[in-house]
Image (spheres, rainbow, N blue to C red):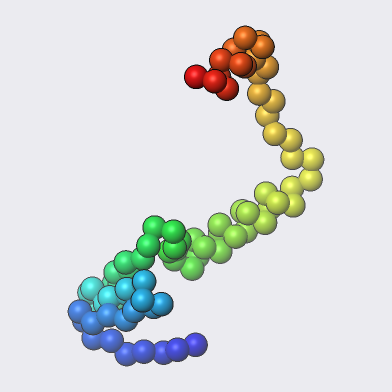
Length: 83
């Protein structure tokens, strides 16, 4: 793990695309701002862990069935494929 010291208003850059800036310090709480491309998910650790847990449970859920979609009559089916 890389450990850096930053002062209020200072930043670090990750991979040239992600900017992390120290925005505010309130007692023992440090507020940071993160600028990242939209394709880079950014989460607090506890949120990320919950997402991973939910994904794992969904992937291993036995007998999970998807809802059935209503069948379209052939005339509607052809029309929806060729607007």
